[in-house]
Image 1 (tube, helix red, strand yellow):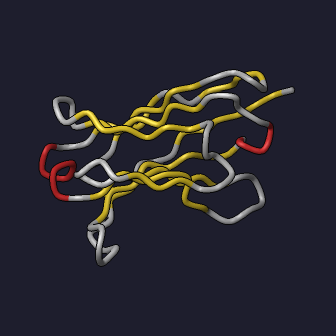
Image 2 (image 1 turned 60 degrees about the horizontal axis):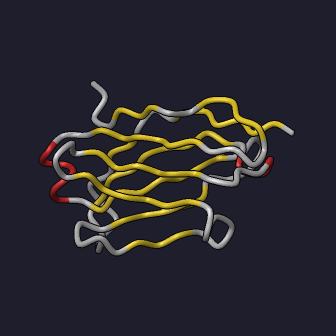
Length: 118
């Protein structure tokens, strides 16, 4: 069964915005750091953004100033607000949950496609 449920992907024009959502269980949300990864076509998976339970965030240089990750404890949900989308943002985006220090205890979403068109 799916532990992380993603939504919000789709097709957008360059310069547009999308908000991805990743809903999980209370126990996963409360014990792990949450993050978003992406895998562009023909390329390796890369970290996009992560957020700890305390609200500390980290972003890939390529998305700084454009993407914002946030957590909503009431909904056990992490969001990725993506603004000023570029063609190179096209990728399958994966939600991830893991223990911050060890990197273990992984849960992954199934992935959601984000396609940015010119």
